[in-house]
Length: 153
Image (cartoon, rainbow, N blue to C red; front, side, top):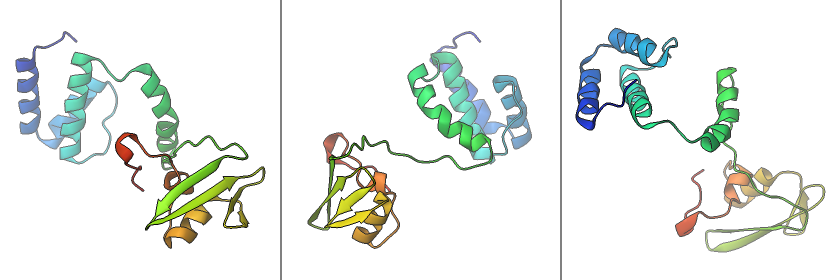
């Protein structure tokens, strides 16, 4: 597909907004060369707008696609894509999290984790004990992002 200029892309997006759901599904077949997913009209418009942009400007870098592939594979197989947070958990490492003004330190051991003198097999069990709600342990103890914000859980 030739690279359309920004005005032509804007016209394509306006045209998408005027199409009915059946016409959007046909547009999907044309642009994506695959059967359309079972999405709402609004999501089809958004997905097709992304596809138009992708064809014009290029897609995601290969490194990003490689990181997304495992999650997409699980979803395509009928499962749910896991939301994982990778932590480098070597024995002896300390994970520190402040929760409601109190600092919690967890030590990684050969067989699990230690928190307040007790041994646990799961970080999620510790996170649940600290918060009183179900948390993903790796997400709860994940390092802060730039600017100090933690991943939402």
